[in-house]
Length: 191
Image (tube, rainbow, N blue to C red; front, top):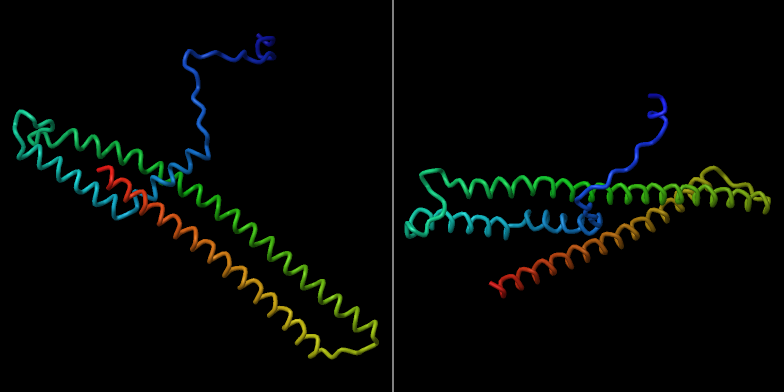
């Protein structure tokens, strides 16, 4: 019995091969679906689809009706439940990916802040060394004003970087909106 516990179990071969899914591509697709499901266009399409379904199965020719109103539109209920059961995990996956991106951005911001602090400390030490080397006696108010000026310069640089990042994000959002509009136009042309 002990011998059997010492040896690793051999891997089994399954009759059905495992499907390998590229995680990044699947994540991008789920984000696209989640983004589309959050648009007014999706709500309009779903509403139009449900109205058409209900109208056909209530007022359409009886021999061509496929979902009985007497049974509570079972097929429509099943389709909407299936859509809801898939949309919730896709939305959660998109949120998880966004959280990961936010975490990376926060880490980069933290590192940038540490670098700025180190730069400020370095500059303060250099200023002190220069004052000593020149045998100048710096007053406390002068040092404070110099440090305040340096901090203001760093704040200006940070705000410029933040403005650049915001402009890049705005450009990305605009590109995404344009792509969605183009996809909508393409879908309308195909209809």
